[in-house]
Image (cartoon, rainbow, N blue to C red):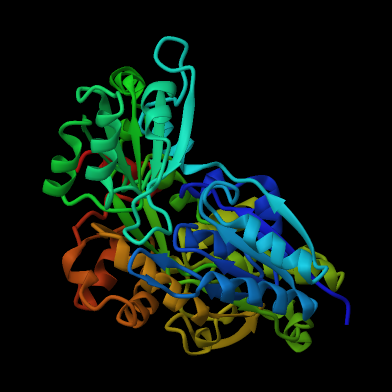
Length: 480
């Protein structure tokens, strides 16, 4: 059997947009991904639907997989002919043990690439408004591990060199040893008044910062209950934050929003919310399975009075099928309807003027074009109806444990239902990972029909039928 290849990939510090092009390309062709706790799990959504995910997360008090087992898995999967991605938070060469994993691959003559990532020690300070070098404040910069393999976990470092020879220090994952770090820096030459900032969950919308000095920061961190993952930055350069703190000024910074999804395409709404500074979690995760084309329906397209498209995805798939089967779109004589504003928008892009399903006549022959098997029993059926499935969409079950871990570390404050169709599958799935989320978070419905559906299903949404589009939603979230 031909041997596979391994990609040792830096996932960046958390913000999904900070993955490198080469790293994303590796994810997109992976057969197996072994990922760490600090690699944003949202990156797994770019993997093929058949990809196997293996969680290798580590916490200070426990290891899901020991490093030796991770090395063995990389070798085993590659020897089995797989394309394997080892996805690590930040940069794999900065406290990422990439050297140990690469050595294991060399021992078994397995081909590999190392894909650098943006290191948290540089990115987190930048997202807090602090460059790690500056001609006035800091011409030298060091990244430092805040724990090691010693019995007490306290790093044995050249404290004198760090305290007197380096302008700016970035300690990785150092909350537990913060008193020890501060004590040694002061003891070996740093002033107790030296500025310090802790940046927790850097580059995420839930980023938190805590400022102090070497003399005060340890007590402050204890009082404010700061914990890892965090970068502790030490140096006068921190003063620049007052001028160039940019990320935390975004209008939705600090908001953690769950967006109910019904589709597999990239969500423009999720992207816009993220660009405004929010952490956005899309749930549930869907996958698409191909099915054979129903030629009997294609042969009688002219006979339908109405064609209803239930999702944006099935619009694209339907017209792809027409092209593949060399069927001229002009053979469609029916009125065209969409089940949502998104579906209507995609139909308009195809050159078809579509109307919302609410305005569809209740008489005539109806063709329902869908990517969901349950549409065969849909409430949209009229006198005579048939369903043409372009594919079958279903919940991607392997994302359930992934999403469960995400929600355990998140603090969702808002749930957005963009359409009435998004509510029922969301309610069916959310109980598997979070029992009380719909009672603890604010619920927002986009549009009158969505609001009515939510109320019928026992939810208590904010009554805002005046939010028909993304722009008005963003304005509302910014002002509440």
